[in-house]
Image 1 (tube, one colour):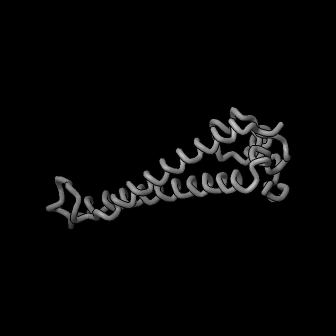
Image 2 (tube, rainbow, N blue to C red):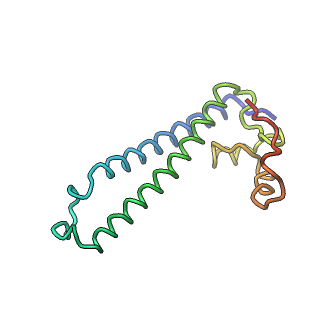
Image 3 (tube, helix red, strand yellow):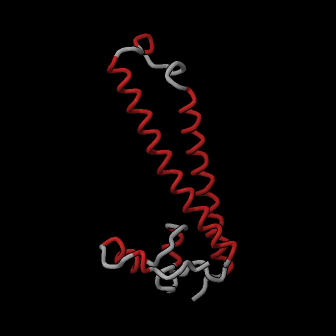
Length: 138
């Protein structure tokens, strides 16, 4: 069962909203990383050479980098879904492994989903090898 035009429009809107949110989050991280140690408003900025302060600042930078990496991967998946939607709207919403339709409810919750819930559960349980997936629906 193919998705209706109304459902596709809804999913496109959801993907664009998620894309905007991810870009905003990455922009916040970028702005925060530019401030650097000297521009921070920490109460301990006068003691910036103290090892504990340096460790805390390093840990904060690492947390920000992990967040940015995670958000970047999410943005990549969102943009991939948009590419699939625009390239082949008639095939959007088909599981890339089984070619079965992905439930609209799943796509509404996870608009970048590439797999139907049954296959995703098997994949997470290690019951299937992702290398054996069929070629992308594109």
